[in-house]
Length: 125
Image 1 (cartoon, one colour):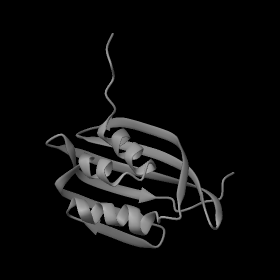
Image 2 (cartoon, helix red, strand yellow):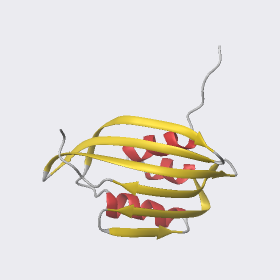
Image 3 (cartoon, one colour):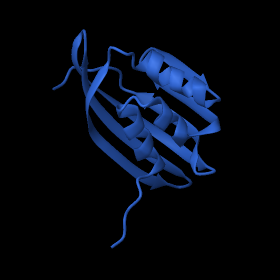
Image 4 (cartoon, helix red, strand yellow):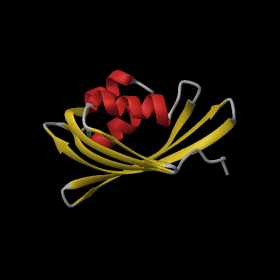
């Protein structure tokens, strides 16, 4: 019986959904080339600490609680991985859903290059 290993993207989505600083850091290459786009701003980082800070201090704050990782889709695209994931959660403003689309490349077994577009917090439908 073979065991399918989760993709780098799926490992990233799981770590982010858990808000696990160490697990996020473990999947990122120390010299990551990261860029992200949220509804009102662009973000860049070139090291693990910078990416973790963007994700867990700016995009998702301590009051943002993830209740469920609703969707994770990953596919190979040329020399990149395409990733789509959706989170359901709540914060003091009420319930929300948020979705991210990303392209990433592996470097030494970790994510070395990543571009992310975020939907922003949306009301559940």
